[in-house]
Length: 339
Ligand code: ASP
Image (cartoon, rainbow, N blue to C red; front, side, top):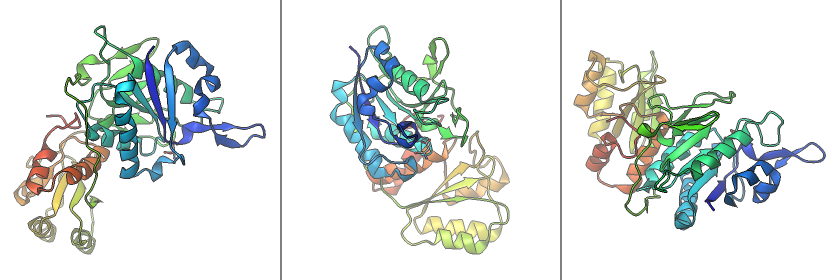
């Protein structure tokens, strides 16, 4: 029998109405009793719950580490893992887990819902049932169909470290703007095998350290010199993630360039991504970004904001040499960038 471990962290998914109509946490320990449809899947399911359960807005690297440790401890006992998680920061956790696990050979599927599992129109049951089916799915040779960290939401399976929450209240809340979906669930689940990572035969390695003081700055026309100066001279920050215009462009006024130059020469790492909903940074394509490579700004290419922030924390947690951190930022570690 296929064995799946469910890690229930919290979020909207886990709420039901009690006898007097109040929303109370759903008892995932009795999951098969509460969602009888699961009995037909004939899987062995074990549930581990966070205590206390958390809204994902309160997730932190310490919780990512906790999830990773739960998975590592029981990795050889299960065929796959399903993480029930609030949707708000699900793309950050998915990105963090992707970096944490090197040589993954089993599925780690995050899911949640926009409406609690106890609501009549809930999207939770479909999300949960199909996430379990995906975590259990095997190729003919017995290997996992999706040996990567992914998000299943509203009939679509997404690569975790390419995902972003695009909508606050629609059921189809997630997208991977720069990467095809990994699967679509209709009558059958159609896997997009050409885009799914290949299985690793090496032993799993879990890197659970996330460190570094990271700042982020979204550029806008009219940004003031005083504000830029204040951010770039904040004591102790290790790196700043800049969301530039279009293909990574910035203002080219003298004061702006001078501030960036001063910051990089003082050792601040500047990582440039696009603030557009899709596409890639191309430093040097326009005059308004040529100066950035000269100053030593690193291109984030087509990485999402979530994958960029977690990549910085992951690299600062695992390497102390800034030259190596810069090299690794340009490398495609887990399928988070296209190169
Ligand atoms: N605020 C909730 C959370 O992210 C929303 C959700 O579960 O979708 O935990």
